[in-house]
Image (cartoon, rainbow, N blue to C red):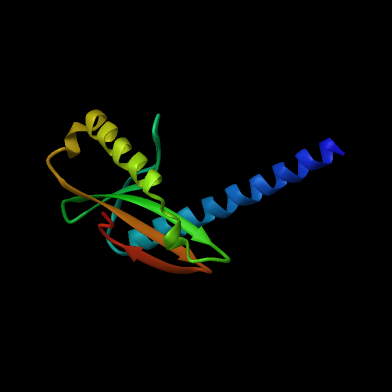
Length: 123
């Protein structure tokens, strides 16, 4: 019985990972169609992950992607997650000095039932 529960959790986790991955790909395509240059994806630090880092019009965009089938994903960017993103931006700037002279902003791409809502400069 315990093995069955572990298997169900593993399958659910895999489905969730695939759903998130597919939606991040949709977000990247959306950005590219709108003249963003993708710099990095899934940038990991000890504080967390920035889903997409992109450049457009001499502004660096740190983009969080949220997606859902059942709720408005815009509302699931928590203050704690935003704090982690900001800390990760500082680390990015330390490692990639070429981008330090650029303006930057934190954006959100919310994907709800294949509808993309891009919110620029959420802070």
